[in-house]
Length: 304
Length: 281
Image (cartoon, each protein chain N blue to C red):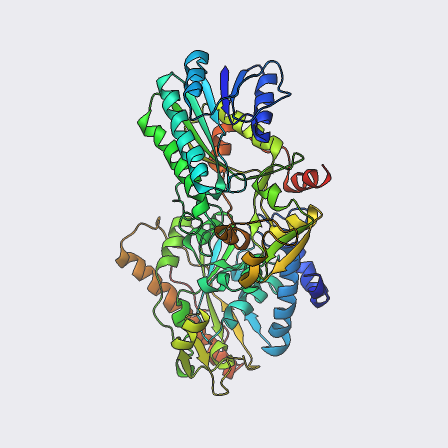
C-alpha cells in the first residue's frame, strides 16, 4: 500500500513512517520541516500542506491511504491564527485532496484532550460525548474543530474510509509530546490540593495503534489508550522529577518562571482534573493491545 | 502523603490489600484509587467507627461477596457521617472486605485537598456515567436517594425519610444490580441540626451549612447502628414508565423504613426481637 504521511518530520511521524516502511509499505511524506536523515526508501516532499505544490503530491503520487499528523498544539505554536491555519486549514486541504484524488482511507490522528478537563466530567469518556473543553480552553478550539471536521468526512465522503483517532498523551524515550514537555524540567508544577489522573501510552504503542487502524481499514471515531492512567504525582515521582505544589491563585503567575514550563490559562484545568478515555471499541475493532504498561512508559522516558 | 503514613493501622492496611481490585505495581487501580490513601482514610475513620461512634453492624452477610450491587440507605445528620461509617463497615466487617463507592457532592471536586482525597479513595463525583461504569465493573455502589435533602433533615425528623430520587432505580434495572436496603441509626443524633443556612452554603459552594445547638456541625459521640437488609431484585431494563419506577422506589423506601424502625427499637431495648424484615421484591 502507498501511504502518505502529513507531518512526517515530527517525532511520531518519523516513527510511523519507519514502521510502515519496514513492514513493506511504500511511504511518502509531506512536511515543511526537513527530515535530513530520512531512510532512502521514504520519499519526502518539503512543501506546505496548505499550498499548491502539496496538491500536486496527491495528484502525481496517488497514495492509497493518508495518515494526517500535521496538527500542532499550543506548545509548538504560540500564535492562535497560525495554529488555526495549520490545524483547521490543513485538515480541510487534506480531506479535499483525498476526496479529489481517489484516496481510499484517511486517518486523522487527534487527541484525547478533545473531551476537556472539568470537575464534573466523568472518568473514561466514550466516543459519543461532546467536546466539553472548548469553552474553558480556547487554545484547544482549533484542534477540536479539526477533529469534528475530520469526523464529518464520514458522511460527506462516504466512498472514502475515514478514521478519527483520539489518542492519549505519548510518553517514551524520544521525550516528545505535550505531556513530555510538561515533565521536561526537574521540577513539575502541580496545583496544590489536586492530583488528576494522567493517561498516556508508550510511543511505540502509539505507532502500532495508528498502523492497526490502517490495516483494519477502520471507519469511525475511536478513542485510543494503552495502559491504565496514573495520578500526576506518581508520574512525576516515577519519571524522577519533583512536584512543586502551587496554590491555584498564583499558579498562572508562576508559569514560565523559576524553570517551570509555560502554560496557557485554559491548561490549568488539565493540571487539576483528569481526561481519561475508554478505548474498548478500538480494541474490539482491531484486536490491538499495548506492549508497554504505564510504568515501562514512565521509566523509558526517565532513563532515555 | 508520606507524612501521613504514621496514621496507618496494620489491620486496616491488611484489609485494604485484600480488596479484590485490579491494582497496578504502585497500588493504584484503573480509577486512580490508591491503597495508601485508602489505608490512611480508613485508619482515621476506623477509629471513629470503633471508639467514637461505637458503631454496630447487623446483616453484613446480605452484602454480596463479589459482583455489582447497590447499597441504598437513608441519609441524616448534616454531614455524611452515615456514608463514612457504612464504608468502614463494608471494609472492616465484611469477609472478604469490600470497597463501597459513594457518589460525592459535585462541589467537593472543586475544593482543593477534598478533590484529591475523594478521588484517591474512590468516592467520585455523583455522575450517572460514574455510577453505571462502576457497577458494570462489578463494584459496590453506595447511594443515598434522598441526596442533600436527606442530610438537611432537622433533628426532630431524623428517623423519617424524605422524597427518594428515582435515578438509582433506573440505574439498578439498567445494570441488573441487586439493591441492598440499608438503615443507619444515629446520624441525626450525632449531628443534631437545628438550622441549615443556604446563604452560607452559597458562599462556600456547598448546598447548605448545618448549624447545631453548639453552632458547629461537629459530630457528637453517640452510638450508631447499621442494618443491611436482604438484597432486592427488580426486573426491567431501566426504560420503564415513571409509575412503575415510582412503585419500585416505594418498595425500597418501605423496606428501609422498616429497618430504621427495627433499629430504633432495638437500640433503646436490646432485648427486642432481632429479625430483619423480609424483602417483598
